[in-house]
Length: 401
Image (cartoon, rainbow, N blue to C red; front, side, top):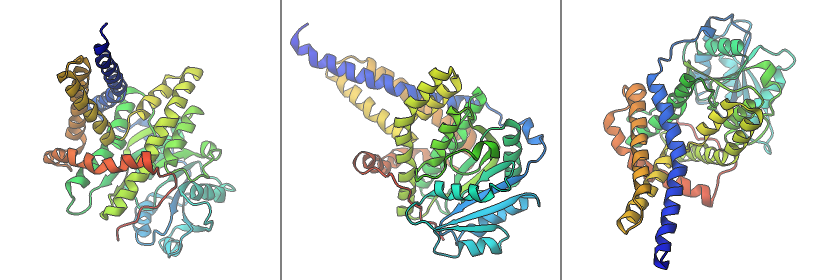
């Protein structure tokens, strides 16, 4: 081999390695979206099971502006045997009083050193331990629960004796920008399309932070008291490894609203995506190892699902690799990486378009998809921030009034 061929060989090896690594999340995304496209989302028989005793926990930090709206969608779904508990966590406003005026029970927690949703939920569980319910449901203070969702979650969780996750989607603000629409689409793919695909394939999914139901005998032993910025994702992984993987319940639905304020939107996405990437890097090997040790393919399925980074990051990584492979092929290296990456690009496109076509076409215009490149450009500083100044502490997203 001539010495001047060595650089070309090294470039070939590097690009082919990158292409093969990207093939894993791309193939998983394509498989999940394809399975979701074929699913019918029919209600499960578990929704006909007897209604268990329910406690709904709402962790709240300075939510006076919106807590009444959340409570108003939950209380009509409860019976006299149920409880609705608002945990006013380090609040400096009237959250607790408003909750009580609306008919909920409110408890107040004051601990300025240990902040975060996990600490609030742990405090709430301790307060009901003396008279526990059969099922605990957790809902964020800025979310709306659609009719019958609470009962549906409780019945499925009771029948399965496993954690259950509702469909959690984001509504677009009035007069949405293309960026809002793409954010809503990314949320829809992550929280409805991909879990639907996993359900169709017979696999569990991940918890997504709100609209979560747990049997008391399971949740009582979960160590929630932490400041993890994606405590829901970590909790679902811990429970899965312990033998309690999450069931997706698409017929139960909880909705939030994308922040209108630019800074609030940036804060929210930074917390979610930095936490997601950190969990992907640290927990995927743990899940794969547990899958082999326990001889459980469902854990491997969760590990593969977790290996898919946030959609905009996946597209950005693919695009950078594809452009590099094209340039390399032009100067004389092997075209194989470029061909492999071109096929991956087609798979990503089919996955996104099929997800939009079946699940998002009614709310998101097709023309909005043309804004995807600009959305990715908006997200690049967020991903650079993960490398340079990673967010590791829980930060509340400012609410719109």
